[in-house]
Amino acid sequence: MTHTGSDAEVITDSLREPEHFGVLFNRHGPHIHRYLARRLGHEPADDLLAETFLVAFGKRDRYVADRPDARPWLYGIATHLVAQHRRDEVRRYRLVQAVPPAGDEPGHAERVALDVTSQALRGLLLDALAGISDGDRDVLLLVAQEQLSYEEVATALAIPVGTVRSRLHRARQQVRAALGASEPMTTTIEEVLHHGR
Amino acid sequence: MVDELRLVHELGQDTPLRTADELSDVRTRLMLSFTASQAEPAVTGRRAGLVVAAANVPAGVTLTAVPEAVELGTPRTVRPPRRKFRFALGFGLPALTAAAVVAGLLILAPADPITGPTQPAHAADILHRAAVSAATLPDVEPRPDQFLYVKRTVGELWLSMDGTRDGQMTQAGSPEVSPLPGCRNGRKATVDRYDKIQPSITEPCVPRPAYPKLPDTADGMLAYLNGEAAGNTSPTNAAAKEAMDLLEARYLRPKARAALFEALSRFEGVTVVPDAVDGAGRHGIGIGWSHYGSALQVLVFDKQSHEYLGMSGGGGVSELSIVDAAGQRP
Image (cartoon, rainbow over all chains, first blue to last red; front, side, top):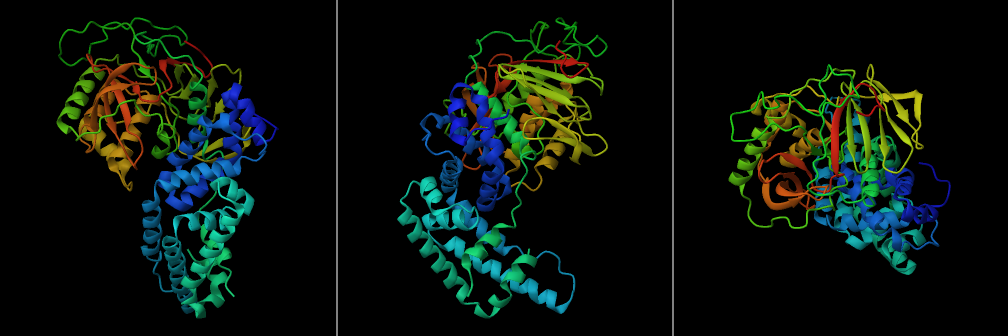
């Protein structure tokens, strides 16, 4: 099934011929899947990906046709599903953090130090994510990880752009505060994150 | 100065982006859901055939009468040999992961699932009767080079019995034929986003035979399901998903099928749904489980015979038969 039109045109066509909706999945399924996996883990991601698109399919007759790109809409639905699993998400952040570094083989001293730093930093980050409010976290992750614009986040979450800004500001402050305690290690942060697990 | 946005971004890089092809199982099931939403509701009570042609009968010749279908039947009460057998196939495609199997079913819940306490004894009883019923199906062993043909309201499937040949699928109302590449020597061709096979671009794979070699005892099947469920947070959910895959998209010989129901009865958390509806709109008694706060998912059995009908939210009444080539209809 091919379709060269915008997402909005695909959705319009899918009202008469539902199979067109598969085009949306081809275009955006992988990213929505990764978003769900990042927030809730791989195991539930497949199920929730399907649910996201089924919900979208059921609501396609209410899609606002002047929005050519359906990504914000799909992210919004996915975020809504994530919201039903808030506790799992927070638990996941704490769990990931609790997982010890893989491999304990004696290596180069520098490498060991890097791993320790990496783990510590990841722990702080995950802790920060677990600690911020749900609405702030939605905005932070949609902007930082999913690379949505402020306007797109506003569309996805059905909130004003001003609210996106304020939520992001708050989230950043909290993450920064959480990391602030570890200022000495931030010099190697980039390297750490690229090498860390 | 730390850029916390950058850090959060980097943190997300741990999670790989799956390719559309890796998600093709989810996609396929979704497509069936999309098209099923427009499909005419199947007529309740119509006995659509699960036509099991004998392996030595030229494919395409539908063997409508299976002689002495009860030959390996467990001793049981009056039940005339049936001429046809049916399943309701739900989202029957070989899945890469058990987790993908039920994708698409989550919001297609039965109308009235039981919300009360579980009734393990009762569920086990129903599954036991389902096992007895399954054991009376005709026993035909397909050849590795044959295909399982699946027909339902939302389309057709041809699935390679040994998983190495290229199968295909169609969707109702569409002339397009989508390939399902077989897995040969650990590699299979990829399918691009336009459903065109790309022979030159292959990826690692494990064959997914439509006729898997499975244990035919309850203990053996239990060990198999537990193996499949290893590492999952909910063994019951993982095992039940695997069972759904086996029931909806595979060919199991009667003993293995019976063993599957027996094995399922030993998992915790399976509950009885007194009045469940399968994908074809047929009412029956259901065996359900839930996971992750999702809606109850249900296998539906005939209330009298305990024959397996289909699953809630499935793709409708289907015909199942063995054919010699992909694209061939019985």
